Image 1 (cartoon, helix red, strand yellow):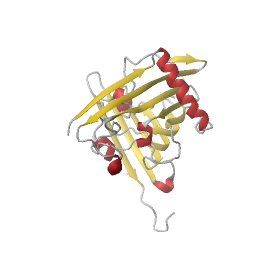
Image 2 (cartoon, rainbow, N blue to C red):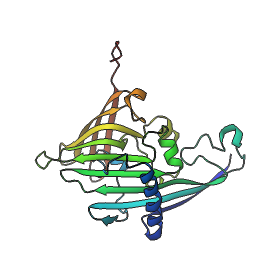
Image 3 (cartoon, rainbow, N blue to C red):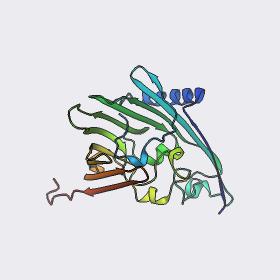
Length: 257
């Protein structure tokens, strides 16, 4: 098998951002604002942290707006058939469509600065959305959560909603990943997202610990998942970072309650 992938990624640049914003807003309107506008990711999500050289978002009132477009062309000389598997390279994740141009993601990010109440929404459209949101519930929504950080709670933050997982070393956004193609371990063994409640709190100058209670992973309702508890720890030192994430599904009772 031979494959060539060309990536076209634009982040928060002039007319490209305006086009991404307009596209994502159309889908947001179609969704009838099913998710409230929602703070920046919790510190425990160190693997998905925004790079230090990320573009400065545009600010409209109290809301920071940013976005990007991500497209690619993939070529496979074996030319997988449309009938057999929809012209997909079976051992690829996200950039799996081959011998064609494809829109991987058009993303619009809305963030309200965290105070007593904050909000964060990531709207996404394209092949990435189809692979991440396999059910129709909250389709086009990568993240949508509200946050609170009480002034006297010693740094405690509480989020409620849908967010990308804190597990794993790879991320959904190809521009922030080590490689354009994400590994099969990320596709088959690591969650994409959770829905529920999570906390994070500094326990020292370099470590932040957290507790999560969610509906399993990669689902919105408990009927398709199960009550799951997550424990997180992020140790950030000047020369290294150490993350520990444990997810444990609560066994169902014999009565099914």
